[in-house]
Length: 165
Image (tube, rainbow, N blue to C red):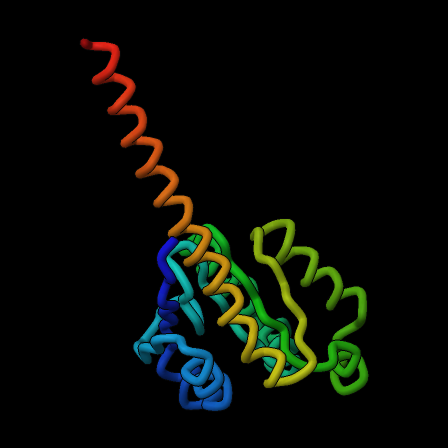
């Protein structure tokens, strides 16, 4: 099996705000392309778009109504949408007027209504590892599936050719 070189596209606004994550990706051997992405912060395969939100931004997005519009675009654009929620979640109810029920309801809605997997991370270091791991999973699994499919097609053609004789 050949080694798959991981490619990750990072939204230009995200790259400017999260240089630590971009540096981690590069140091981990990823080919990083900084481009304008319309629906996510990280694109790790054609099937997987990742939005990163710090806890404070998550709360603000929930309050001003942006959260579910962003969730709709993310879930419509990608088969495997992910949301990385960075920071200590209980701080939301401590420093905002968002009730814990509203917070848990929003998280449930993201998962159940939009099909978005929410991955909590405690800090930027942990967050930096997630696009890399998601890229490994989706790109390597897709590559392996593609190789298996090609092998299957080749075997199928051989069997068909064998039957004709």
